Length: 200
Image 1 (cartoon, rainbow, N blue to C red):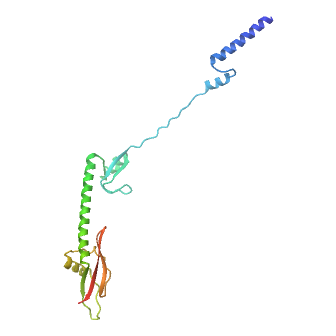
Image 2 (cartoon, one colour):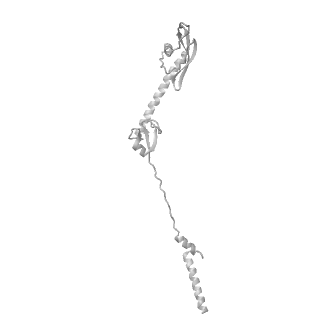
Image 3 (cartoon, rainbow, N blue to C red):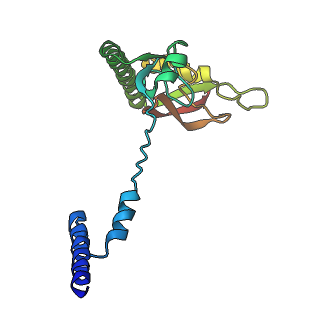
């Protein structure tokens, strides 16, 4: 009986060891194996919606977006549902960009020409430096205020330049004497000169 019982224990021990080797787990790792077999992996993938955009050139000023001629990147829906149907913009193409560049070149040339002309006027006024205006005294021996037309005529007589009212900033002058004035021909070009008011 002792011999048979010993044989059974050896058989059981052998079977247990064999089971552990087949599972590839160390002794005592059967509980962990069961947990791993039952455990699953859940992967959540989120796809972000991509908003399609397109480049357009503005055909007119658009509040909160830009001014005429600017190239803007806007959503496809905004372009096709509003800007393009309303005639406020066009989709950018090579032909459109060439047209814009040509227009910009013309505008730049016109601005440069205007500035050059303003500089010529300013040089003439600066060279003349002073312009005389004659005033007659009234019965009270006082003089009326110098009028814009009087200044313009004095300048034209001496330089041949006919200036508009918005070029000269004329203060109130009711006395005889010499006064400083400024002629603004361009945002970047101006000329200082004087007028001398004399008794006629």
